[in-house]
Length: 416
Image (cartoon, rainbow, N blue to C red; front, top):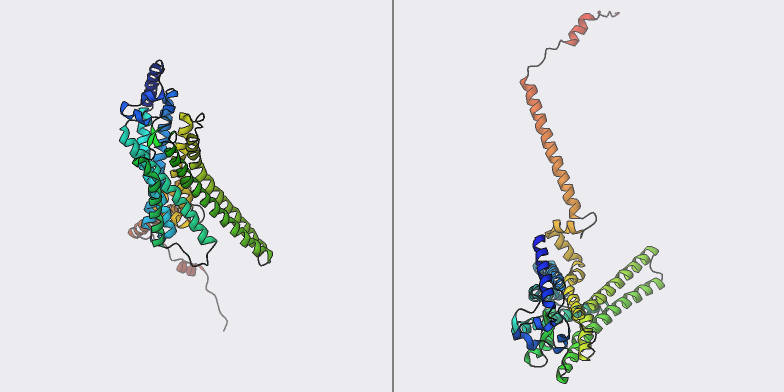
């Protein structure tokens, strides 16, 4: 297999060298029926080395496999466990569904185009691909904002009587899909369009357009699909942290806590701050590069927009489908317990469970017990065989020691 891969890369390198002698541009690799999907900005760049395509294809393949596996596990466990059915967990399922559909619709196309080193599916497939990526990505973004809003209401306002019921969570999830469809359907209807970008192996909305009406769409999408969700997430998690910090500070000030309890509260605040930073940072890491690229294109600041600089944001956005299940599902204790109960061997190998209640420890103990049972059974069988062997032998002749002792000892005389 490695020999085949080496020969393929060697053939691609020779093919690239033969192609490069003609000084062809990046757009010259695109089939004629998709030429109208290529902005003239990409005509100035040369054909990249095939190793870059192979590297991106391999990265997309690994991200796709990890994203599909993680989100399938989330949907399986949350959907089949009664103790995980609730409003908040339904939002986590909606997030996993959006990420799963994104990987199912994007990863195979990206891998195939990367190894083909061009777009190989025609103009209609480009529009469908761009629409699916925008729709599922926007649903994921909006769902993360809704999860942050639900956590804010549950922690900061726990006594208002408001709770996210299952029916309300269904309405929120449906609203996220409707909200995303409102902002992703216009390019299919003539307001902007889905075009090729980067290495010309993927499609997205046209952020390089010079038409004022299309630029308005890009600006509105930047505001309502990036700025608004980012503001909601940042504000909600910040208010959660400051509310918990203020509550703990009041308890410490009133001297109603012991020193160990104060240390516990401080540790809880530290963990909460870590959760806040991780949630906001990873969300920004996934979507900020793509938002910046689209904004630079709409503002005609195109000097920094190269095939490499526009493909990396796409990788970061796809990478969010891998760590979203880790942040919002694996951190859930009940989900972790269900995962350990159903897949104990996998969890032991991955080191997801530690402590006295670890199934890994129980598995090792049970194996030791089974060994002891085998040994005890073997020893008992040996004892039974030994007893039967002793019964089958005639008893040895032993002299009566009492009689011999009595005959050999002199008789004692008693005085009357």
